[in-house]
Length: 423
Image (cartoon, rainbow, N blue to C red; front, top):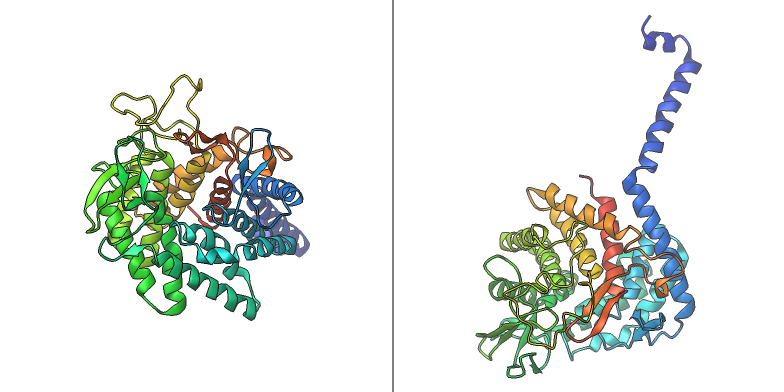
């Protein structure tokens, strides 16, 4: 007698068999390594940001990093990092669906309202889209939603004040001296600026006015033309004259003008992938893939896939213009912020590229490293930040081997993308 025939004659046994299989399958899904990793990381995030919320009650001061005493170091509303804390709170709410996280995210988002008028640098997109851009995905109140939309529209208008049609790019910084002490940048554009374009694309969809997206496309095309070297590594800073001619290709936060600053390469991967999503222009996908291939195939990328703060530190052929002291530290610091944002960018890239499995696998390895004890903070430590070991700007002797709020933000985003992608 076949087992199926035997079970059919004993319906109770058949039901028990079905239930056993169902429980077995559901248990396998629930306890899969991927699910458990994401669950563990968000549990840590909840504990850390609960600690942060208890210690940070001044809504004019936004968590950025930790100081030498291990306390939270904040910034005001006119910096470039102040939107990431609210954004991280939104991501925790997205994962947990707990109303207390939405309340906290809303409070810290609305504290940024005046930043919609930020025009003194290019990062209004970072500030407002990481906060309000996430808020509009979850806000159901029509009046609040209308207000948030108006704020994002004004934020896009603020961004456009830094766009010169003759140059074809959004100016990142105002006139600024380079490290070589002989060059003054007139119209500096940094690779980071790719990250400010997503808000412009969104506002064009919101308003039906193509002007914002047109600026984003112009900026991306000119960045693609002048920020990439032949091997698709990136310059950090490209300086232009009033007619859009390239004057200088240098660095401000990297090791040398011809080196590859790790976070800058991550901005390129993420930014051009996003621009492909928004435009379906194959040129942007090609650029993202080539930038990603440079990153993941670099011989100086550590085995755990979390990069040194620059790919070329202490290598021959790379000469810093700033006062670099190789003996200052006995090690080359990693940059978890670069690893986190690159993981997030690679995960999205994996959904578009024909060989997407390659990018997914690399991102997964990065997330597993960031989720380990070397990078993920033990609850109650690290001033409440989630990740350890990031670098803000080594040349400025600023934020070296410390937590950074944007490392947390892109780590949480990457985990949510990882959860949604089946490979």
